[in-house]
Image (tube, rainbow, N blue to C red; front, side, top):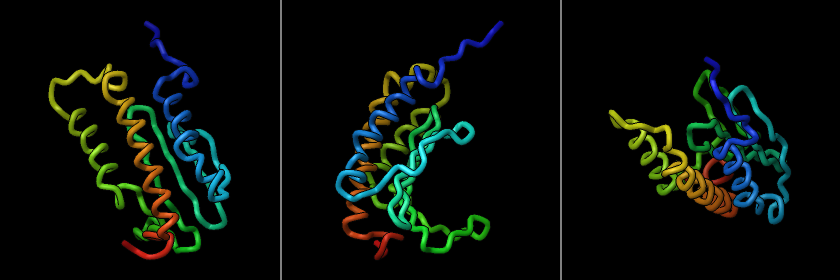
Length: 153
């Protein structure tokens, strides 16, 4: 029996992601002068990276989960092996973004829950809400130079 597979270009989650990243994060280009430096699949992950000078805004998405949005200051040292990170996740600065992720994980972790329709029932709205909150947090961090972009806190 062959496994029926939907091409990524026709996947609702992927298309929602691409459309809403373009919509919510456009301010990086139009207001702050960032450019898209990466827009590609790396394995199963889809990366969109906005860059300006030594700052990268990384948006990582893998179908089945919510995005990960990181603000990275490349002039600071980075060494994954020694747990030295030059990036901040939006969840470090946004309680709402963390709540959205927690709600999704809690719902999907329950026993005897069929998650086959999860994206169409709940996940798409969470995905969109998360991207809106992430964009708001990124804007705020850039404007206030918070975290690794400037001052901590």
